[in-house]
Amino acid sequence: MTRLEKNESKIILFSGSKGGCGCSFAASCVSAYLARKTNKNVLLLDLNIGKKDSRIIFNIEGRDVRDLGDIEDIVSELDVSILRRLVVNFDSSLNLILPSLKIEKNKIFCGKNLEVLLDVLGNNFDIVCIDFPYYLLVHNELDLIEYVDKFIIVSLADFISVSNLNLLVDGICCNDFSYNLDVVINKFNIKPSISPSRLSSILNYPVKAFIPYDRDIELLFLNKGPFPIFNYNLRIIRSIADLSERVYEDLNYGA
Ligand SMILES: Nc1ncnc2c1ncn2[C@@H]1O[C@H](COP(=O)(O)OP(=O)(O)OP(=O)(O)O)[C@@H](O)[C@H]1O
Ligand SMILES: [Mg+2]
Image 1 (cartoon, rainbow, N blue to C red):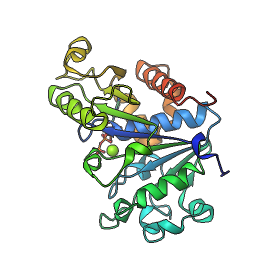
Image 2: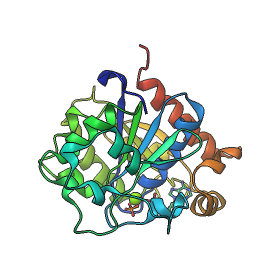
Image 3: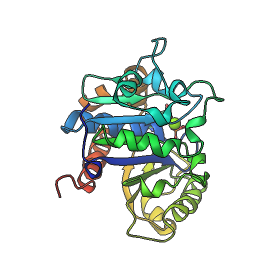
């Protein structure tokens, strides 16, 4: 881990309009893609406290790894040596910070702890992708807007999800259309869903990417993680790769 100029590092926050919409799927696939295809040092910060998803997907369940719960009392003392012991590294320059499995170990959301953590991470990684549970977006104390370079909001294409999506996005950008926020419609090919053309009339925001559902890719992802999915030339993979490339361009490295 090398220290970076603060403004060189970028924070991308992934959230969803509904549970199970594919927020974690999108966050880990885009992180894996960026880690493999760019020369950037990418960190995936999983904030889903009490959930095992990343441990299972990245095949580290049962391994004795540290998580956010282990540093919750020493966030203000965080330094590179603590970070080294907290972060799980993978071959392809992807790094991962795991959430605590105990729901009571949630001090990371207290006071300024999350901001302090993001500052330290921003000094040590080029790109920080946060898998951010949508219910935390209503947590007023988090002044995230200052920290986040791009929001990616994932939604299914059904009427309730899309209605909630409008509400959520309005809440984040307060009608400021210059805001760096992308809407991603996931599993649009699964019924009941609204057609892409009708969606654009209901949605107040343009859609950055439409990602289809693919059962074989879900199985591969759940069993082997996000890396091997990029070996397949399928529509779902092309749309994830394209989204990742465009997100990367928007981060304006070197601009
Ligand atoms: N486009 C897709 N194609 C195939 N499988 C997908 C796709 N999107 C998501 N999945 C799968 O759907 C399931 C739910 O997705 P995921 O866990 O990412 O949703 P989430 O929004 O993070 O849910 P939670 O509210 O639990 O955090 C997972 O098994 C995931 O692998
Ligand atoms: Mg999730």
